[in-house]
Amino acid sequence: MLKLFSSCLRKSQRLGTWDARQTNRIGIAMNYLPTFMDVRGRKALVVGGGSAGLSKMRLLNRAGAEVTIVAPFADSEVANTARSGKVKWLPRRFDSGDVVGCVVVFAATGNKTIDTCVVEAASKTGIPINVVDNPHLSTFITPSIVDRSPVVIGISTGGSAPVLARRLRGSIEAMLPDRLGELASFASKFRSAVSQNIPVVARRRFWENFFDGFIASKILAGHGPEAQVAMEQSIRDGNSDVCGSVSIVGAGPGRRDLLTLRAFHLLQDADVVVYDRLVGPEIVDLARRDARLIDVGKMPGCYVRDQKEINALLAHHASQGRRVVRLKGGDPLIFGRGGEELDYLCARGISVEVVPGITAALGSAAVSGIPLTHRKGVHAVTLVTGHGAVDEAGVDWADVARGTGTLVIYMGTAKAKAIAARLIDGGRRANTSVAIVERATLPGERIVEGTLCELGKLIKKHRIVAPAIIIVGDVVAARNVLKGHSFEKLERII
Ligand code: SAH
Image (cartoon, rainbow, N blue to C red; front, side, top):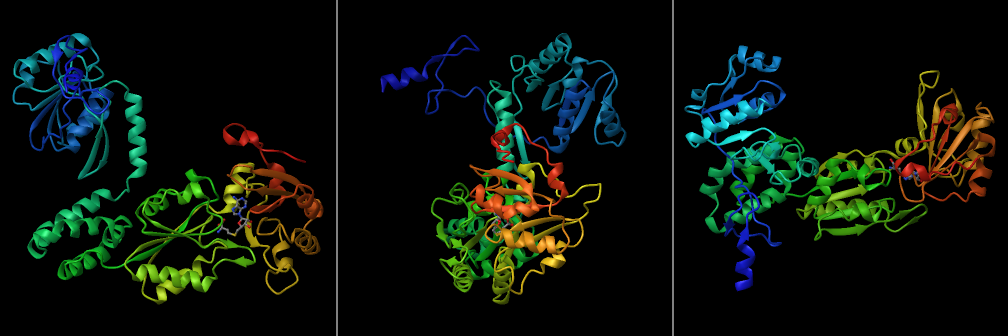
């Protein structure tokens, strides 16, 4: 106990005195009081009209303050905003009387003598003062903010590491859905209706279900009117967890950070994640800890569950009120049977959303530095499947071969030799450049280059395994060998 107390009694570095502040779990005390100040309609002063003053003016303006800027010269945006009547600009030097009646003052002249005068004037009457980039002269500092008003998140390192604060801000920005503010406003609009209709004991649960559930996901997806109807219904029923939904989500070509933010948010909210073989564990791991993960690992020719079963599985979980994420490699609507799942679920009246992903063609082109189109004569790209027997009715290879556009062949390695023959028969030059991209964006990624007539041999010789894509066309010869990042490890085999 004594030890604990003495750890709290520390010498304050800044003030040079003993203080008795409580510390956090690792024994560090707060240097600043985190607060949000209501400045709406109240006077605020900014001294200085350069870029620092401008950013403080913008901040105060957003928060609804009545802003006055004192500066002999000012940024054109300050002048324009003043002309429009949104702020007041006094084009002269600072006078100590300027602080009178203000609830907050910013000194942003960059001139220590003037800033010190502003500090003295503000301090005399106890007005909170911030000197830009000078926490020692300031009585408060401004945090980095993530603004999803009315949700605002302030981040501060107490002035110790501003770059870290900016990094954190970036991570939080990416993590939070764009429409978070709309969600908060929506909830606020219904607060009194919920209070009137839902008994106190059930109210917290109601709101928890609301934020975790279908209605919130509709708002975040931008379907406000649908959410409105569902909310009115759920208030009548006393239950906000009205119905489940399915999001058919593209997971991209493999690398976790090639996932879209929407995919990431949906994964974090999902009750059930139904995923394919092509989706790696590092992506599936992004799901909530208590989400149910169902591997429907579709191997070519060896279906763990057939499509009918998968459709039924999705519908079953959604109809139990769960939020289901159907996670598919690449883009769900490109050789992914996402369209069939969409049809099945829509026909049963289940709420469905499709979230695009980076398809393997684009992932492979990016890692291999192959432009899929070229200003000098390559004006089209065809994505085609090589799955199934080449001689069976299916892909019309003669048609695909026509023209000079780039061909990107999915699932084509097993039949590569026959496909190449069809393409040459159809008119493609035997020496057309080809690239085979194996495991694009994933560890062990490889790129093999050659010509169309040797495609089959290349695949055999280099023991190419799935997933791999074949790119056919003159653009392959225009490929740039990318340097840096993970691309350094690319093998240029031929
Ligand atoms: N919907 C997916 C495609 C599914 S079909 C998409 O849009 O990408 C599966 C085929 O995609 C594989 O056989 C392979 O040809 C290709 N593929 C998927 N991921 C790949 C990767 N990381 N590298 C190369 N090819 C890939």
